[in-house]
Image 1: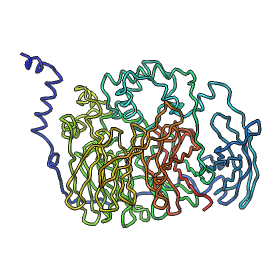
Image 2: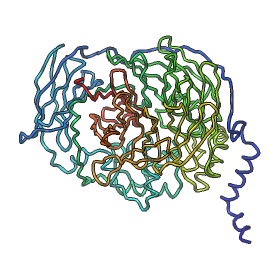
Image 3: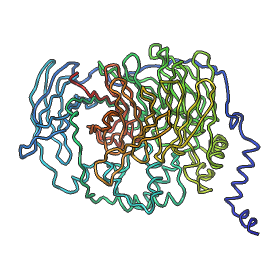
Length: 627
């Protein structure tokens, strides 16, 4: 009688039906563990266009602005940010003040400029100046402390406002961080705007259409928390900035790119010294010449798929995801071609910046959302497939693809891996209707985001050539033997591991996105060490998305996407250095290093118009401007 009662439950019936259907129609390649194909490439040529001519509105040149930054009482401001803008307001260069309030800002452009002095809890000071090539100019700034409580609150970072959210359970808060901060800040000026409960319900429902995988109860908890906390009233938070002694040695350059709806996801550094950005929403490659300031863009070739690619059944962010490929991550090959994972079209693509030729390789529609890509010592390209629980390796010389199915933890993940291709194929007949929300078992079986293991970051161990990946939802790390392709997977701490990197000694450094920590994995002993990221106040939390290990200093550079900062961690002293960023609403992605020692990334908060300047940007930090 008890079994009969259970079987009458509609969710149980649907689960059993899903398992039966899976057993019958599981697509070729899934759960076989390994699929091998020789892929044929399709070569097409792109067309380059100029976005911004070299130093339009200002002049290529060198100069120095120096001076003093104090408050109204004459007390020097340490760690203040002095930023110069060119006439277009699309190029910025920033330096920090010394403990005595003095500063030296080395310019890479001259002419008629705007200079801004900024410090937390103080009013911005803006001056217009003119400086010639090789010129030196003295400029002083005096700022007033903000006294209006609303102005003070509005000046605080998103992390301060997000900390005001109240949660009935730790699980609801963890789900919120995991799913709702995935691509953007919450708590900045756009996302904390007061809304009614019905308005917040519409927002959260829309986010679910973008693959925010929450249950109905979690949906309700998020709506209740956001509608009650973001009421427009000022928050009473005291943020304390750690002014690191290294700040006056650093310079930050930014180049605004794209438009208000561009989503320039990753930035890659080419062997030619240029920065390349993948506009995931518009199927465009952005190219920055750092020396001249010229920015160009190349439109990727078309493909016989609808807008949104294999995800056309979803109502993707309006005006942002207008492409079909969805370029995501970069890796440069041995032949200096840039290799791209195309998330929406399930293709690998190489791009030759010299010939403007693209070569497209179809991985297959049963491999969904190609993600991070890295090159190994043999020149092979390893990449994660986030929604299909796979890792692929492609040899550009032989054109051989090996696609590896990764282990699963639960029947829910097993159903996801087998049914996601069918689900998206079926929903594609109902474009932008979000039918997947009705049909997905994360909803009707009340399982939430854990049904998607989501292999995310991946990197190659420089010591033995093994390949390691992490699963952000499943809290797993895996090792793949580069010869046998054997997979060995084990648990990480419950931190939401995102985009890890190796150091020269073979230690894997992992950003813990959901818990705001830096993990060090000794891959020999398989032991973890946990380093909590510093926060601006005790109730705040950080969301480190990615990191990289500087090849010279060995420092770990870490994104910190809720507080408009970047961290550098010295493994020898186990000390964090905090770099406040000059642009409010900074959501940085992968870090790459240039041959001249700069640390570069892309600011790709989604949407870009929420960023202070209204556009995304390339950003490079020079931690040692005097070297």
